[in-house]
Length: 270
Image (tube, rainbow, N blue to C red; front, top):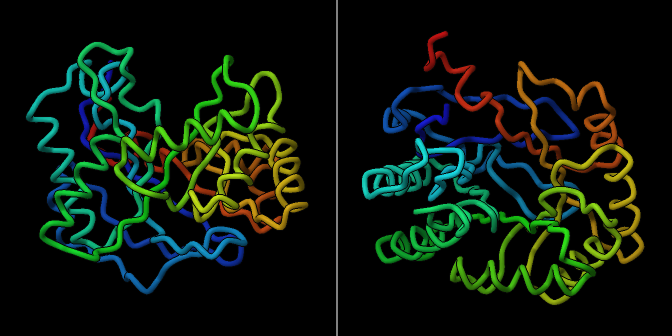
């Protein structure tokens, strides 16, 4: 059964010291008005200069009809997503993570998550000019995409949907089945072309993480992060060497589904 939610969170783990997480799990996102994030208490992603809040908002569900939202996207859910976006910023959470495949046009009635996030940012800016919003998005390593130029082309399409000239963090969403060297080179090109501030990967194993780190290092570009599934009930990154490698290399581990899609909040009964 798909769950009906308007937003999800993710956590950023420092490789240098334990996090002091100050967060409230709630059935109604609006009740987090009492939660204020210390905007000065940020983490630098890996060896990059990009600093983000320890708590971030994932926009996987925004516009989606293939997994979330009971397979239906409507005005009510749109308003809920926008309210979650605004409340997050009101609470000091400025880090938002999306992807080009969230809200895929192949799904009936879906609306692209990047498009929605870009719209929310623009509307918010009208009333709050100059407010910081840190945007992360991802490249889909689809089988028909080859080489470094495919990364740049996809990134420019994402920028068009977001309505931005650059993004703060650009990630490879998952490893490619034909190899990853060209994709890693594309990330480096994106940095050198000024299209992104920092680059990362997602769902990368220890070996792939090390390979990506070394390939970017040769160009003087740090691998900022590896975003993986990690929570109190899913501890695989501790067991498969991914977290240890991140700690060793100084790559920030970004945990998606840190509350296990709501299962750890007490919201859902057996």
